[in-house]
Length: 315
Ligand code: PPS
Image 1 (spheres, helix red, strand yellow):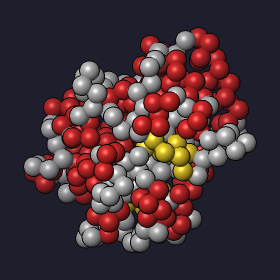
Image 2 (image 1 turned 120 degrees about the vertical axis):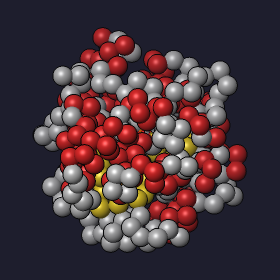
Image 3 (image 1 turned 90 degrees about the horizontal axis):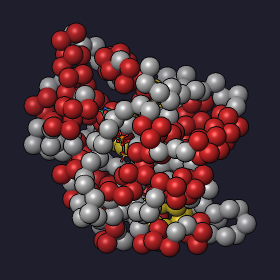
């Protein structure tokens, strides 16, 4: 539990966190991802040709979801019309509809995935140790892992928490920062997630990509993802996929902009902006010098010897 001393995370988190969260195996989780769903993922029947999009939250999941779906349909945009991309890719640890008020009874998205024809594209943001054993040990299923520099991820997460009723609305950036540093924000440790997948970066079933590299050269990223998915396209097709996957294109498209989804009809007072800024370096507008120094010290310690580094400012 929580701090390892038998004190629950929820009792230490701000009181409002309990309205939308529960605690599972030492991690705060949103109620829309109840224990029965988390456990169904452990027992999920993985198929050889499954492709898992895996991230820590706010690291580019939706972006890669759009790209992967376009690649899956050989760049044919018309195949993505009429249905939101969130409905084409089951979020296997969540309930259907992502409504916390009926999360105890709603259908599990892992059940929807069970009924899908192959090849399946699936999404998960679970801590690696909770994944189906064959995905965790690398024996079955391909994985695309998207990593984002943690400072921008935190700022994005803070805003997203304000936007959806499915996450605690932290009253200020400073409160969110402290909760994050204490490992008390929903979904567990960013370091555990990134470092686990980084260790597996050379596994032929794993593609590890960084948000900042996608920002720098989206065309290279699209080619890399296509190759990983076993597809080879003309330059024209690649450029078409890039064009439909830019921040502006995704924001304009109601089928890729998540703001239209009911689960994001959140706090009425908050303007909906899932596709908020999509940039590298926005953390500079939020981290105080003191917070930055504290974060850097933890980052240095936890990342030491990993060989993994991030770009924190747009090059
Ligand atoms: S979630 O809720 O965990 O699934 O969020 P996720 O999709 O992982 O991350 C959301 C952030 O990714 C940004 N995003 C993009 N940036 C650049 N280009 C494109 N096309 C794009 N699509 C999504 C999105 O804006 C969120 O980041 P912030 O910093 O909040 O803008």
